[in-house]
Image 1 (cartoon, rainbow, N blue to C red):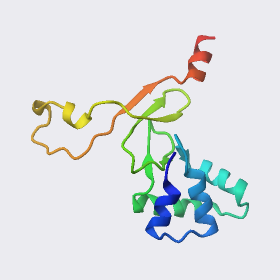
Image 2 (cartoon, rainbow, N blue to C red):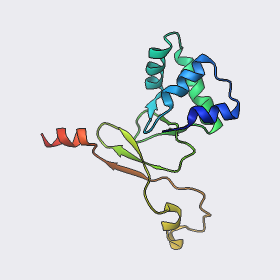
Image 3 (tube, rainbow, N blue to C red):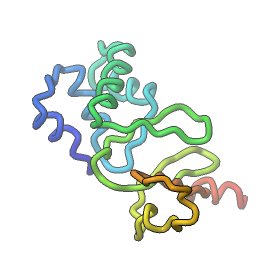
Length: 141
């Protein structure tokens, strides 16, 4: 489970009703919603929330480093609340579902010195791709 709400409270971030509902929508395991999905879920809880408020809140959360933008294969940006927990992503090549995964090993140390071209490495992003169980089942039908 993401600890987004706790982190925001500890930062002293002003949690208005609108900001709180956006944070609540994002809080959880394997949450990678688009801005429109965040807005739809937030509007279920707080019908008067404006789309612009959701977009502005997401932008602020990204700027604060509390939420990470995830882009895959030219699809809409998704928002990941697990910005403070090391993980990679597993993406369904068909439907775009994203899951957090925690592979063993450090991708920074697995790149041979001869492939670093003199760079000082500061980070690495690994994205695993495949078919989720639902898409795999429909592909076999």
